[in-house]
Image 1 (cartoon, rainbow, N blue to C red):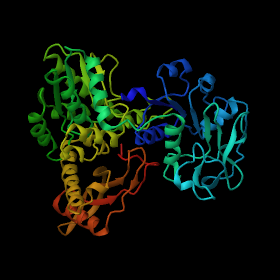
Image 2: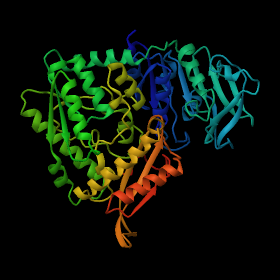
Image 3: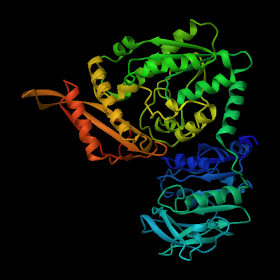
Image 4: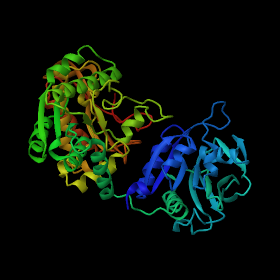
Length: 518
């Protein structure tokens, strides 16, 4: 079955709630798309959704400009699941009573299931006490709307779930997508499978066929595409999708901006030069990027400069190759979220392949991975037959080491950072920890401190080590690395790199931090 025939629409009311819900729906192998909360029902209806999820958000419905969805959605004969804010909004718009700040619970709370069907069919709810969940405490439904019944309550009597089986409308005070809600995935699956009638048909194989068909349709039988190939997981998967879709009509351009890790440029040239059907071009633009970044210290400005230079290099090279109308790149969903281009999302940081694009690009964009999360991209890559050397490579930012050098980017800082990063990565891999970590890297902090080297006073830069565990890059926790490993890394970095004075460890989770420093 084609994946677009079974689609869940997730309405985004702000924050990262929608991204997390969408990821869980995909984990249940059901295709979904995220739309702005104020999308008109007629526009939603055109998608032919099997169901709609109001993903919640940080707002209160009592705020003067609280986001509202089209009320016609609730009369559309399509299943709707409101989560947190989405439940409060649905209850209020349909005639229920919602009270501001009534709920005293904050975070994890016990709840009792009053009716198991249709949402609480998972075996973890077999016990009479129900379970525990991460409860939204800002507002609470005091009385459900006419036609609804209470499906679950917290131990303090707060309504935790409501439903109207005849109209297939349901609401959850608890958040099923977070790890703090055991059985939360079972709740979502019950809604997807039993209420919406979806089947687990959204697989890497189905996506590959879907993406290939979509590329063919977009590009046409004669269109040529230039692929922005960095050698990372995302752009590599795009290149192989294009290889399957249009073959020799794709020209893959690898721009060596001089901001890659040690030995990485050589690896990219060796691998892709022999694997792709279409033309592979290596552009050495190291001096050009360093010149453009000279004197720049603001991280957002760095990102936008690098993005602009990337586009300029691609455009210049592509124009020299003849009639090419399309530019393909490896934008993924977390890039879009963090760049603030999804309605309701705050700008966390601009990504070079999102925020840096000029309005007059000159090419039509092809972004086949734009709605995929990183873990999905890896699964698709495995389906395409990409080697582990690519698939298991840790994520690397598009602007490269420029956002791991705090302050002005210089050739000297980059060389020092490459050596420190290579030592850290080598020791992580020797310890066999690389598959347990989402990312691990070094950062040139831009700070100089006093040290002692060669029996005398030394004044030099500080390098920070960053290692995190994550599932999708939307949240992350710092990795508790063994002390003996950290000791070896510190000794090697300070001993083998003459100019470096000190090594420190970053132990900040995301949030409040981000994975990268800039």
